[in-house]
Image (tube, rainbow over all chains, first blue to last red):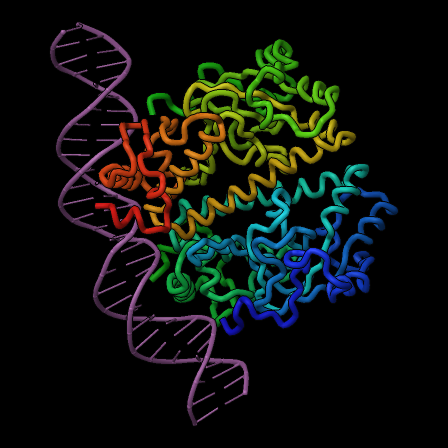
Length: 270
Length: 270
DNA sequence: CGTATGGTTGAACCATGTCAACTATAGTGG
DNA sequence: CCACTATAGTTGACATGGTTCAACCATACG
């Protein structure tokens, strides 16, 4: 990686994680400046805002959201052990979440695209359990959790909102466990590409042609493989005519044969 | 397994999963009979009941709980696709949750001991996403989710309750992803035993001596390994003097050397 | 142009899977 | 009580998918 994980162009980490009573601090100034987000204009608002709220409550909720915190490539939105204050939405760019082992090994637990929520891991323990690192220059919206909880007390849609996001995360992780526990390398790579394609499609982008925001190493890490293995299967899929692969630019030429488990890939593969 | 997964001595699956308007049905009779559980007398109530409730609310909550549904060894508490109605607590025995792939492959996503909650996977989609199968004759308490939600609307402790359970599950699954993605077989087996020991300790049982409720095959499945590999590492640990292994009876003789990542196991191992 | 980084590819290796034989134990029926 | 069977677990020999190590290529950047 060109930028070490500790280099941060601007360190946006919650100051409270290290300092108990900080001075007015850039972060608070930023929050003051951006409080009251123009979510109404944001095309991601269907994903970020709770559903089924009346207009005034909706406005209240939007006022909680502090916008446009920028995270430079390789910088951390939060790190393991940081005090939990906000949930975050990716607005632009993409962010990975990484679990760390004592000996330095890492497991990427998710790649988060615009509209995805981050920080759910910390809801119980009041500190984050993983690092969140920007894969490219990213912007996020922050949603102060304490205030969301408070608002949830007498607003049912807000109440169900965090629960819904958490439950989604539980299901997503279960599927990933199935991938890590039971699938072959080939199936993992195919599943990864299909998942990504679906998620781009959900965001109104082409599911058949996209640019990977992450390196081979990160894909491999996420899938429980090495970068070489990922590269090899990309090449296989390319030679089988299933994909065009040009560095991080992917074009899916035959989505049917990307369905893992069918054996189509293997049969057609080198 | 001596009993097929489809044999159920008594089929307690929610009838609504298959029949839209069933007659009074054994299940409903059972619920009527057992409604209003004696949670006050249950030693697991610290785990099952929300914290911080006033006595009257606490009583209300306990009245929601239907007790003592029995699940015979190998029978299902619920299956993938079943309509979601209840969360469950294991009262006695143990229950595994299993994700299924189209081609028949399975991944065990958890072993649930007394006090553990089941069914969180279904909160969003209103159907379960995995099977829950009893490893031995088990009893569970059922907690109708709709009523919990309703009660949560004006009772803050209940509100935070499901959220807390969900968030715990997210963290647990993340740790499992780290295990499946990054650990060696040896480390997985050690981590598994340590985790079980801790959980038995939490339940007031000895962390150093216990009986595994699951077969080698199930351990292997859970850890992303084969039964043979699990058996081999059990033997290694035995010969290294770390464990006594007699079939499913485990005695941990040197807990320090069960710490994975330290290399202690490998150094002492065969 | 030289250097750094990311990606591809090949060859050798090895951790784990696969297959198979064997043991132990429990249940079942004669 | 003894075969007989079925299931769970152990162990060995061998196969292999994926890792490791290393060389090489492509691109970006100073």
